[in-house]
Image (cartoon, rainbow, N blue to C red):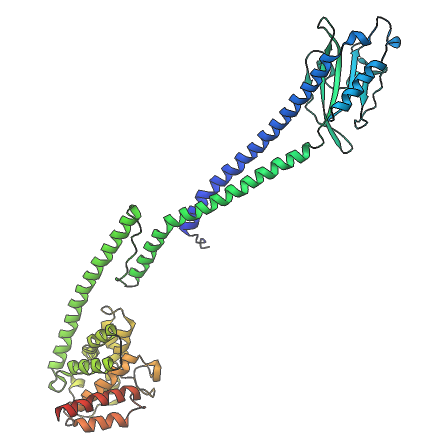
Length: 458
């Protein structure tokens, strides 16, 4: 199964952003945990401060005469507790309890707003197991870890020792502190942290996008340049964007393509000269066709220029016109120089010279137009030509120009089996075959050139 291709830019982007995103997410989770812990610590500190303040303000001897529990005066103490509840809105209940034995505590006094989850009455005894942490509260102030719920209310509980005038622990103060809004606070913390995560993630993504682009664009340019060279385009140059290593790589690539272009140009020149020499030798064997390629190239260039063909195309047409009959190197000399009428088999051999020429020139000319001109210069406008029987615009336009120039020079040249035609007769022949053998537009342009030349000669 082929691997799915992922762009280098995407790899850079993910490599940069994913670790940062994980760091941001982890950091903000820790931040949320820390903020939650700090808020809890603030609540505990506030609760202990209130409980300690109240505990130290109690003059316990005033409320406990030297008599049995049943004769203790609770009313004055209850009033003090209720006033305290009225002044501190967050405190939901306060109870003062003394230890009777290892298992029970006796409630001296207390008051509640009615929002706690227990009904504790002054003058009653309660098992210590009903108040987790109360035994420790006899020794040191502390807040229970658990947050208790009662209906829609939530509260924290503190236990603080109540000391007598000599500083000895006498009783325990149990205080319930309302933290119902703590869920809202935590949601606010989570919302803030989530907002930070989103903002930082967006910033990291934007930064990752630009950084990955900064890194990947020069490499993308280089890849495109390499592909151009693979296709034979040695004109390809990539932009030098910076003076860093990527810039040096771009300069080296451009120098390489320049060198390849020069080398290819020299090689093409040598090969072209070799091909041209072979054509010259071919024409030298037949006095009737000597100079034919030069004349065809000359006529083709005049027609193309008159028809506003781009200069680069004109240059290529002239070069390939000089080699258009190179395929005849693959045809027997006896057939080429035969004076008698050719047999059908010999005609079939002659019809192969365009495709043979294409194969000979394929290693030299990469341009499709050049090879098409050689292969198609015996095609006809009406589709009855060879080797492929192409018609109309299916035939390369430059090949159609060469076809007209080639036919005209052939008519104006002497052959072993006939004398050359006059210029006017050749022009008449072009007109007669316009629209069948030749493209009418090209014929009209060429005749215009020839007639102008005839007038200038006088």
